[in-house]
Image (tube, rainbow, N blue to C red; front, side):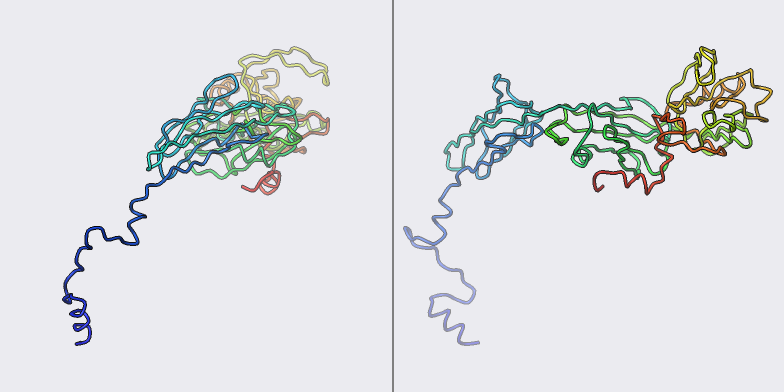
Length: 390
């Protein structure tokens, strides 16, 4: 306990005193670092180059200073829109293909010196531009079985690249997946029916995305829509010859019906989950295979592009509930058909059971069902058709 005190006294200090101020003019090891002012350091992305994706990112960042001005300008002298903060500028719009852009502006370091922002680059020149089209629209409402479909104007080679640029967001946690049903169609559906009142956001951000073979996406497309606030499900049983309508799991109506004749594969009503696609208060029915043309019907609800409808047919009322005599459609009486017509909307499921042929990519006649047969594919097979890891 004595030796530290002696050392302290030898240094002219007491055990609890502070070191005296350094004499005027004295130097220390930290003084130069404290006195040195930082210079601005810029990071420009991209500063230069050829074949740059017009989707970006395009930005300028600064450390040790602040940005005073930044501009990204095309060869046509049009300035690209962007957001500027003290330490970063970021472009807020996509650039064009096969165009030259130049950086300009400056940053000021803590030392007061100006550092110029400069550089020039050219965006990629595609061999082909491929556009995308959606099957859903903004501010629309659909039934709980509504699948999402993106149709491309040409075959897609690099499906993984394109799929990664497509996202589906929902206001309610929803498990779902993309599947490529052809080289020009990517479909997304939930594992189970949508929850009622779900808000859905579909973003296909393919501008600047490589499609393979030198092709790129033409432009982004988006849609924001809603799932109906009720779950309407129709159950069509070809064996019992009944057509039941449920809302939120409660049976509303149980109608007698007549379905497709089983003695001709071309006329069989396909089993599987169909999806309502279109409604027409009146329609002329034509089927040259069975030798009829322009036969008027009312309350026609299309459930498959292979020609399956739910519609009025007062000519088969005596057979409804007893015998299947149609060419694939579900026949109801006029009042019953109108009841379903008034209740249903695009995207509602119609679950057909009991027949000898399943709905699928193509039926025995070679006629593809078109939109939509997603729900006939089991989930494991569906997810195997994805081109990218979720």
